[in-house]
Image 1 (tube, rainbow, N blue to C red):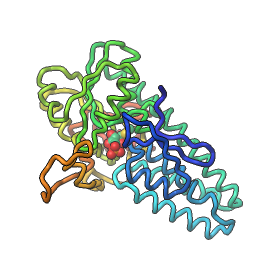
Image 2 (image 1 turned 135 degrees about the vertical axis):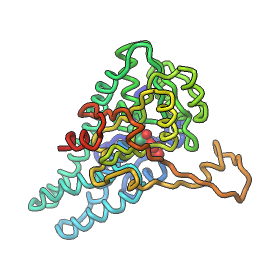
Image 3 (image 1 turned 90 degrees about the horizontal axis):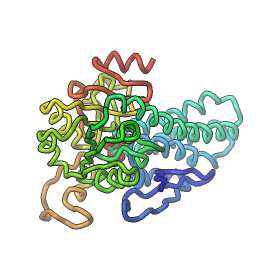
Image 4 (image 1 turned 30 degrees about the horizontal axis):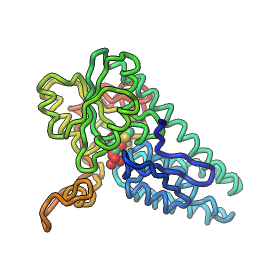
Length: 344
Ligand code: MRU
């Protein structure tokens, strides 16, 4: 079964509702920009590259019926960007995608509005295709860091569900498995949203990759037993110095990896790099509903009336990262220099 996070049919963006997986495969038709905002905000679609591409189509849906007056059109396009950017704050791919659409329109500002609309749609389609190509390359570059017999640990979901195809960290695992055959994975369940248990376990199973699912708090013990050869995680935003925001729990894994001398890799397309920020301290971290912590599988597990923290992401400092695997190659320290060079 091919797992697809999104599909545009020429008029409607179809999103697979990831909140219902792995039990139900429900199509969410997004006909308006509001539908796309809602799908991203409510995590029907999630994962940095996937929400970037969804937002690109959202930009098109936002202006496709706009009038021919150019001033009104550009105002509506800028409003659409602002609106979509507000859906989730941490993954930079969202802003990267909406900026790219806006810039494309600006390039063509002398052309008739209808032509600009067509170009916007084509740009979104191109971004969808590019994402798949990029992720394939990430798998190719990243798999060179592993060998036959390796067990690779990962957190959250970074597979086809989090992207257009292949995934990022997941692409590295998949390609390593294809190349070396005897490659296994360890997937962390990823509390509180359970992207590991619900989504990565589904994708690993579908791909036929042997794996064990563990709860997050088992990771240190499993590492101490010598059962992990490398860790590869995705990213929602990488600062110019290599500090990386990713799913909550990633930082803990990186600290444990350093203690146990296990290589720790981040895998992401270069669209996840935010050249406008110097370090991870500037990355906005999304705080989600406390219910995600007080409840599990829809059932309350904690007493009423208690205080809860629920940051959805954390920041891993660059010194804990051995390499950043991108679609342009593997970046090594000092990341400030290697990132600068790759973005040129
Ligand atoms: O909150 P989510 O599920 O959108 O978080 C996803 C992650 O943290 C992923 O690791 C990241 O977006 C990279 S996905 C290829």
